[in-house]
Image (cartoon, rainbow, N blue to C red):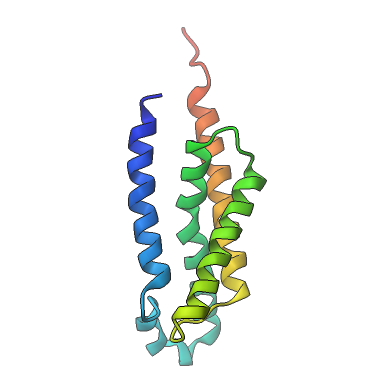
Length: 131
């Protein structure tokens, strides 16, 4: 499989960016806080969507790098990584907020990324009709 080295490099780059985002000393979304008091529901929705989107590449890359691993297992790994990140934020970054809703959103993102990768992989493996 020629894609494996490229996927591995992308996975390392993504993992580095993810670690920086999750462990940055100040909340990454601090700029959004300026308008959040006027629209708290919009802020919660935006934060949740951002957490889902943040873990879509995680699930997709894991599904592509380990094609025999099922989507539920990818979701569980995403949940475990998210729990580790939130626990680390809670323990060493008091200025950050560790929440269960972040874990749920990250888990959904990992599952969604895995589903998307599986769907795209199946589609690209279909034989093309000759005619």
